[in-house]
Image (cartoon, rainbow, N blue to C red):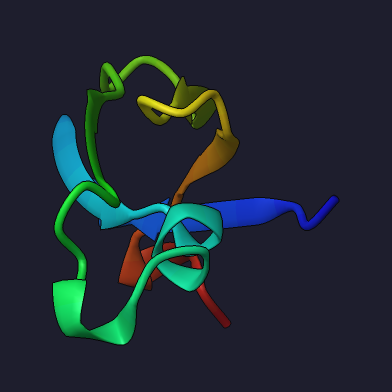
Length: 70
């Protein structure tokens, strides 16, 4: 099984992402239809998980603010 990870901006609390497993198992002509997942991550958390409609788990990581990146 492939591990999926989405990285969101430091101040984002909601996001939309593509489940790569869903996208790869459907016809290319469908694009991302049915493969988009939405979720939220409170500012108080740096990581979490979201599950797409077909049950694939996607790890969500919050990016470090630019002031903390060396």
